[in-house]
Image (cartoon, rainbow, N blue to C red; front, top):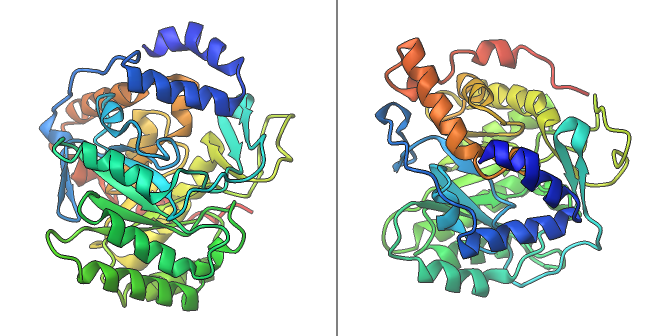
Length: 362
């Protein structure tokens, strides 16, 4: 599939506006035009995180399946889990178009979508319809741009999806909603975590894990503040990281000046350094999810060695096609067998000191 995509599918999709191409890919998954792959059930890749048993550590990051349209189709591509959203209480159109820009020479994308989604009610209906299906599906929650109480929007997400989400991601790291990243400051984070986790504790049924997704553009002092604050709350994990505002080292000559968050290969080093630095700060017990620039089994394993329990990708699938997840999982399994590693968890933290010793790029 990946070879066919690179020779034919990519040429067709790249002739379209990026947002139109994204919509077409969702339709293809919904209608079954994109074939799934045979499950790769390698026990060495299984990992338990926050009480959830993942068949493999590779997930689809939030931002692709914004409206919970194709979670099961994504799982059938080989992902060990998928994450829908970001979902806001009310539907919103997001920022003006155009708002997605491909940087082909860099295998990267700039987006300034602005949490465009159909709102809680629509996603709730779709997730309710798949309630009996197997598979880990997280719900990424956010706040409406014009909300007068953004923390209340996150609380509303917990309450709305509690019976349906395998886990929650509290997304305060998008650069495309003005002021949202202010919630990463210690006072804002204290209120956010306090209210969100309190809302979780009063729900009935199975305890749902709550993860916090942070930005890759934080200075070391902010990492200290985040680590100190989450130590005071029963948070279940961190996702590191969202897109970056940095444009350092890009090869592309077009669209690099566009506003928005950069994702893809150029984000790998920055996000991996941040991951390792946070692992050092939070200790060995807190689960971490590594995101940013993963495009192969080698980069996925590098993230794990730098401190990640799980990893997620998205942008690389734009450039390599829907067969990427299955290929990455297969290659991870082969690498484990080659190196005589019995469980992927054994690789976690092997290179934390190396990556944490690097300076966060300017």
